[in-house]
Each structure stands twice: as structure tokens, then as C-alpha cells.
Amino acid sequence: MALPSLDHTRSEAEFARAKQLIPGGVNSPARAFGGVGGNPVFIERGAEAYLYDIDGNRYVDYIGSWGPHILGHRHPLIVKSLENALLRGTSFGAPTVQESELAELIIEAVPSVERVRMVNSGTEATMSAVRLARGYTGRNVIIKFAGCYHGHVDSLLVSAGSGALTHGVPSSPGIPAGATQDTLILEYNDIEGLKAAFAARGSEIAGIILEPVVGNMGVVVPVAGFLESCRELCTQHGSVLIFDEVMTGFRVAHGGAQQRFGVTPDLTTLGKIVGGGLPVGAYGGKKEIMDSISPVGPVYQAGTLSGNPLAMAGGLGMLTALKALDPYEELERKTTVLTQGLGEAATKAGIPHSIAQVGSMFTLFFNPEPVTSYSISAKNDTAAFAKFFHAMLNQGIYLPCSQFEAVFVSAAHSEVDIAITIEAANRVFANW
Ligand SMILES: *Cc1c(COP(=O)(O)O)cnc(C)c1O
Image (cartoon, rainbow, N blue to C red; front, top):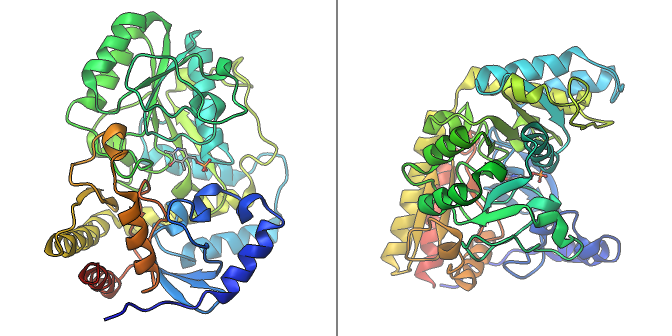
């Protein structure tokens, strides 16, 4: 039986137009379908677990704007909060009560955060946290792990490919080698490599930045002892441990990966969910370290629209709703039904795969090996993924358009949505 194919005529026309106006037709490259080929779909609106494109097609949405929509699209509490804020004004450049309210909710949920500063994106949060770690310690070297993504910060935009103790080589033109010469790239989950790096250069290391559960080389789970080793080595050597929880914060548990794994960082970066779908980032941590930031301390960081009233309202609506609903157990249960169903479908069809899941984020890897590091993730069969992606899209299932991304389940997904998704995968693999 041939699989269906959706009509994307209007999306195709709009993509052609956008390419004449915006580089590649998109404002962030991940949306361009570069990893899977074909044309991106233009979205008209979202509601609960669904996206609607401009050709009138409906999709079950598993990207949730790449993380933020853990409650689905247009949750009533978030909409109400935004409506109220909009009527008071969009920006004042002066303090508002809502900034303290959101800070309180973050501090309450993530106890390692004693003080928090709002910014406008995850990238700004990680950039600022790294500057702070360096300013606070008076050291330069930052350890980053291959395959972890921390936004498009110059010093962190170092791909790796090599777990060796080498200086990072920038992965984009326009980044001078000087910007990454103090970034040390190690292999994720390599405890021995980490110990060796500290043994060799401990007194120069300002800090470690990592995704405590990786979402950006597909989902990669920290092996037992890895996060603990990061913690111990930083404590021993006076380095700052930064958990980049832009993706995992309010996702893998209410208090993020640090709650789930019981390891406490010095600084935490947040984004995505914390803004409820508006552009928000945040970084926070120990009072003693955060007090190094301007205007209390000498480390400069600022933002004209930071703490913006609409952005705060998005975050307040989201965190208030999450606190009231506590959706995490139910999210994990539903996600497990989905990953088991997808795994069975792939196994039945003899398709080599592995699945990594933490809470409501997961990746179906077209790779028979469990993916624990970048060098293993690099062996994923991306052509098989592209085929799977398009076949699912044509059946109304919107997955992230790259094998190296996490799939997100939201509280808005119903049992029926999950069942439909598994059925679609069975049809795709039966026609493989
Ligand atoms: C998305 C992401 C970022 C970057 O956030 P932006 O808002 O896209 O700048 C940083 N770190 C992690 C772990 C992310 O997933």
C-alpha cells in the first residue's frame, strides 16, 4: 500500500519567497530541513498538541517549538497571563514586580539557584554564565563536551570530532581561533578523560559547561558517575560547574536534570520552557558567584529588553501552570508508551535502532548501538532518518527535522495522539 502524500503547494511558494528575503528562508537554520532534504512547512497556528500549516494540513506536533511547549500550544493560563501583560504595556526599561515573581518561581523550583538574571535567549544565558565563571575564578579555560550545544556563542561553537585534549577548532567561519583557544573539548561520558584534563590543567580551568542530559546530538543520557565526577572535580579544583539546562530545565523534572540526578551545579542556564514560548533565557546559581555580576560586581552583562513584561508573563503563566499541574509522571508514562511502540515497530521490521529517553524527551536513533557520545552519534544512519521523517510528516506526524534532535512529548498529547503516532510508524516501517 502506498503511503499518503500531503499537499504542500502554498508552503513551497512561501519558502521560495522567503528565500529571496531571508538567508535560506529561515531565521534559524534548524528549521530549514537541511538534515532531511525537501521544503519546510509553513505554520499558520498551533492549538494544544497540533500544528496547522498554511495548506490546511494538521500535524501532531512533537517539536513543541524545540522545547518550550511542554503544555502544548496556547495553554489558557499562559494566554491569560500574556493578555493581561499586553494591556499594561510591552516594555518599560524599569523594574517590574513580575520579574521578581518569575525569579521566585525559578528559585523555588531549582534550589541551586539563589539569584537569577533574566536574558533574552538560551545563547545569552550560556554566554553570560561562561563570562561569569571566568570573571569569578580569574581563569580562562572552559571545558565543553563534543556534541553538546550551548547556543551560538563564539567560545562554545566548537564542534569536536575528537576527544583528545586539544584546543578547540572553531566550527564556523567568522570565529577567530583566539575565541576558542581556551575551550577544551572532551568526549561526553568519558570520566577518565575528564580526570586527565583536570590533572593536567586544573588550576587554569574556570569551569565545565555541559548539558546534564544531552538533547543536541540526539538524546544522550549521562552514565552513572559522570555528573558526579564533574561536580567533584570542580569542587576539588575551585572551578565552576555550569549545567546548561536550557532544554532540560522544567522538562526532565520540575527542578530539571539536577533534581532528577541529584547533582548540584554552581550555575544553571535556562531557556525554552522558562519563557512559555516567548524569547527568554536565564542564568542563576550561588549567591556568592552571582554577586560578581554588574551592578553588584565587576562582570558586565546587560540587556535593553531583558525581563521584558511580555516575556515575563509567558514565563509566569508557564511556571504557575506547571506548579499547579505537576505533569511530569504522566508525561513520562505517555512518552514511555510512545518509545516502546516505536521500538517495537522498528524491531518488527528489522530496522537497526536504539532509543534514548529521559522523561518526556527522547530520540529514536537509526543506529544499533546505544548512543552515549558524539563519536557514536556520528554513526547514525541519517538517510534512514530522513526517509522516516518525511514518511511520518506525510501522515501528519511532525517530528524534529534532524536525527540529532530530541523529540518532545507535551501534556497536551492524548492517548489517541500517541496511538496514532505508533500506527503511523508501523505503516512506515511496513513499507520500508
Ligand atoms: C536551545 C539551546 C540553547 C540555545 O538557546 P537559544 O534560545 O536557541 O539561544 C543552549 N543550550 C541548550 C542546551 C539548548 O538546547
